[in-house]
Image (tube, helix red, strand yellow):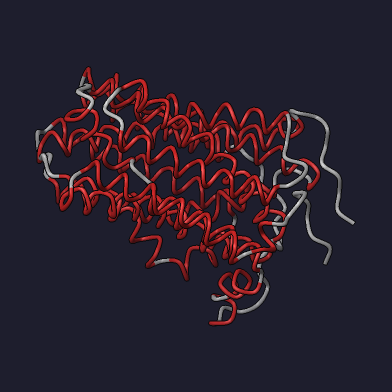
Length: 411
């Protein structure tokens, strides 16, 4: 029998380890948003080439793809808290390298891409570990509450980080990279302060069967497969983040601060929904809610691509963030509750590759299409594609569509 969810809206924060985890993850996410805004704007300032904006995403995604057979196994076999802490330190070093290039006026696309590859390697190891660590810090009945607050942490960083990053970059790129460096150092310190949590480590020897356990579990569990792949193709086609410097500068005629507002708008919509979900979690018709969220994401993408008015563009981005939060909440809860802890790292490694493909590879898709057809057609085509994905997956994964409550399955 599944354990009922706690009615305490702040249940996760009753656990000190989770509170440290929450704020550490927030600072890390905040700094990533600052770096993302600064690198994108600086790259477009220096090159005026949409393809380079797409390559920023590609070079951050490739390490997750190439290391997928390693990162999940590492998260299942070793202390996840230590892995995340080390990754945050590496992220701080990457921020320091970008700061050095800026101070010395050595900014060059391929040097930046090299640093972003290291960033990508760090994120490839941190992703499965941080996603798997959260469920180890709270009891099962508080897990949906923790997932909702995790999402609100990320989305709050997605709101404040881009705006703050745009304001900092408006002052100077040095200021942006310096603050990102400071926050990553603080995040690493807080993560090190978390006591070693209980963790069911993979006991078997390393072999191909163990390495591929994540793929095997996902392919056999159609609900998890459907949830992960739906997000992959929806955001892969509908993502427009990489092109925001073009929209901010050339279409909407906004400056770095305006770019920060555009980058923050999805987070504004998402944080509103995330807080609502923390207080009023989805209790019924979860599958339907997920597909409606993906469809609304496609509608928001379509409107953003066609808009030449700042307030309408910002509103459509807020709709995209709000609707995406619904599907993310359902997906992450399903993965956390349906996955045994001993394979959680490997399953999350696969999930992170799918998420990375949808985000970073989606940015490459958008940048490449924009360099051929233009920014507006690239976004509009993506929005139409997202709507098609929602319809196709709804028919192809009926079990996912019919899921009612978000509870652990009986095994």
